[in-house]
Length: 302
Image 1 (cartoon, rainbow, N blue to C red):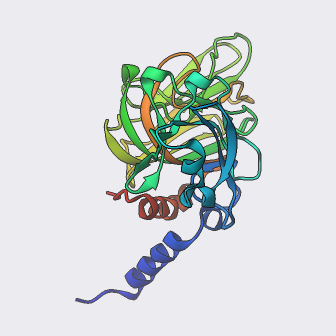
Image 2 (image 1 turned 90 degrees about the vertical axis):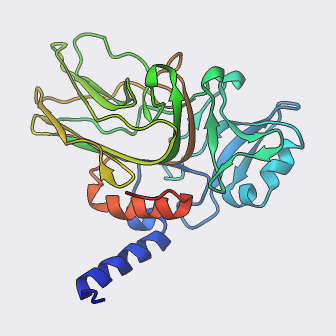
């Protein structure tokens, strides 16, 4: 069988990218959350509370893999994530101070895993949610943001995905703002509202329930045109969605959130391996990042 030089080089590039760290493939994430190292070092990954006495402790990536986290939680106990640390260097940590809303990383003394990799498990019935700052999503008349996630999507209230999105309302009049994240029927949405309270919303096709997913979505505002592109398992999810909007400076006024569409309702049963956020258009790096996630977490691309 003949393989062209271009094809062989392309395959080699993909293999090389699988072995690279995320920050080598696409430097400068605005926020990066994982239980593996995204930098090549041994970063602090999570702060965990154990159920037996509510003691808390930080753990690095190597301490998770070496068993120190499980040893700390103890036999038969549960370990809850109080903080999922941002590895980007920007300190955009995801936190949950309310003990009852903290997702789990250890259950009955056993590390939560899927495909032999550790995961953070969000349980709908327990209203699990982590919340971050509103400082890193981009703003202005022209901006782009790209999110990459490796996760297992389970059932959720009202078919909410519980993926990375925005917390809080958005109905205050007289300001220009946007929201993004999970909408109804397992779809990705972006909602933009101008100073005249005119609302424009775009949404993707639906994702499947109860599946391992490598999800990418990119939102772009450029010269008065709003765009949403969504991909799952390497394939585009429906077509690119676009709409004209008022060309003015849009702000992002709400905290980012993981595990729900809001801090108080629409929680999700989902398990997260990794979440990467860029305040730029990263679609040129999409194949390489998705290949890296696929290889690491044993999730086959389409």
